Image: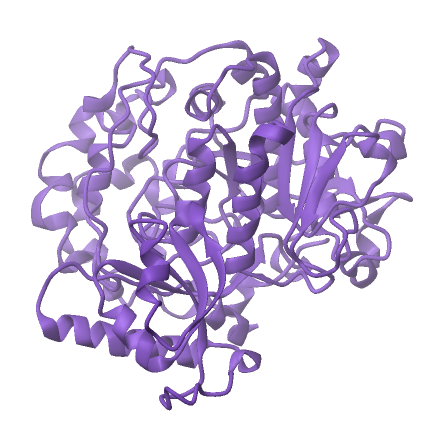
Length: 574
């Protein structure tokens, strides 16, 4: 698994105007990293006109739709696909042209690396009795009983396909298969069907025992992976682009992305983040899984690292609808985001030992026979499934408030969330999903800010001071106004649930959050000691006086167990 993890990194480079030596260094580094990380099967024969070595597959983005294609016009490159939603192209470029592109400050070059579905292996999470009490825990069952079940709202599930099971009735909407298998309603891997069941299964196959969050919602299968469960960045970008293009005709109001990549570039440069923002801008609520690399800080995956989308971490409901025994499973990824320092995740939803639909004969089904629950169901763990439940909740909100745009759906979900199990915003976000409250009440929000600073160059520290300036934890952003903003950044909204003494102005202003303490060498690679950033270290008294002095930030950071193989394993069907 270690080799696959090495290939999962999205490596991007973009340099603002600066010394020539820096641009040359960036170009050489880009060429070296892309060549070293390219899978063996991608090594192509050299172009006779360019003897610099084998071509590599990349995503080239620019500031305009024609800019990226124009940059490749006179180069020894092959353009495989246009990606207008991110102002880019998928291309195969030679090492020489790659170096030239990397040195060009007007383009961003990103490796076409693998994307993984965010579920876990049985070895990565302790099992408990399977349960599917999340509709009761979130209040969705009360909404369904009152006639709000997601009817008329279509949720795009960008995943491994959806099997046409009885639990979906006639609510499967014509989708697309980008995996090469030719059928969006054939789930050869098994992940997409499980996810779809959590969103909108109606319980037919289990006599009502296991139902989804919005059992009346429609499901649009956007299939990006086949039986292996493997896909890549370019395919996912094409899938998101398809959703954006077909949003009006298919009434797609929600997009579920239970997948991710390790972010290396800022969310302002990463094409995966750009793609989800293009969907958000046309009126699609985007829900993304946080990832399963917890409990280490800085482990939120892209596109969950994007400030606009709703990023969901996992909650262990312990098989009960009551919140009193809720816990935060160690596998759920933890913020802040590793490049920009955004406060993520946004909220939590059930994601441990949850029951949903089985795709008979699929890869997951065949290799995990002990995960079967009855004749038609399955149990799994991971933030993939937390995201799916939240997508169902978003569909319930949209049905009840058809004109609600994504910002307001997010405000409802975050502004009505119940208390999280740890009280730590980097673990719980704004708290636990409460679909009933989100569909029934309208929370106040603060004025939404524009993006506050230029993205840091790859490999340079991010300033959390800047992230703090637009975050919901900053008292300066608290207000009762409810404007119609078009952007959502840094979770900047008001919620009375977070105004206790632990988060008040005296605790968060002053020298601790400004100046050199937050943006210099103190944030580089060696400064992120694992134990200093784990879940328990960020609550209660951990944020006062002596906890932030020099000795608290030393050590040998981001090494060993923080990023080891077991943290990034494939899938948890326990």
